[in-house]
Length: 122
Image (cartoon, rainbow, N blue to C red):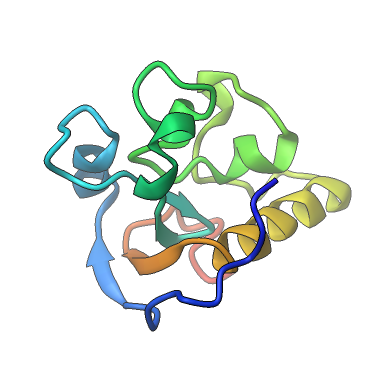
């Protein structure tokens, strides 16, 4: 596991729709790779060996896959932004992932069109 970084840039608040986020899935090498957790968009490009196409966690690239992270699932159908049905123990896992990413990756924006069920819970 990689250690926390002390050289992160100040968080940005740039707006991204879920559709716009798809462009940052690693399929275009000229663009960064973004992963969103609970609406917070992280630049995970430094770990393209993990989040790039064909890699173990690529399922989360270019989208908000919060539910899948909370469930510890790598299934495509679970990598969706609506985590409102997660039980308390999986919400804790999701929050732990958000904390992990916050200490290791630059925050580049926010997803502005999350499902209503989780919109105000981020």
